[in-house]
Length: 142
Image (spheres, helix red, strand yellow):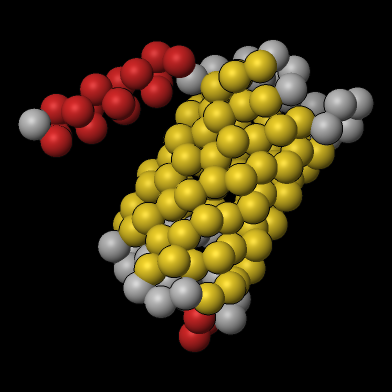
């Protein structure tokens, strides 16, 4: 039953998604996901899953765009099977809450975007602690 619900969630996310994304970095290593509009030109949601050398997992982010800029801010949660990628390495956890500070990088290509993000993270499991991660990604879509 859980597998069926997970598959339905993935299909729904890809049906609603306006952009497909792939990123390298925090929290798991290589992430793939979708980004979709919640409030046009102001708020977006993101669902992602990732795999790395030490963990695989997934998460969700709520992203708020700063008008008239390429910047966005957000909050999210994630959980994985092993420690996430962040600094300092001794404080890493499997799951937690993260802030997202990101910017779009200007590319002269239609329907293709690149972004850079910093992730201050509060780990909740298996121990509590703080860390900072980063990611760079490509986004395809409208």
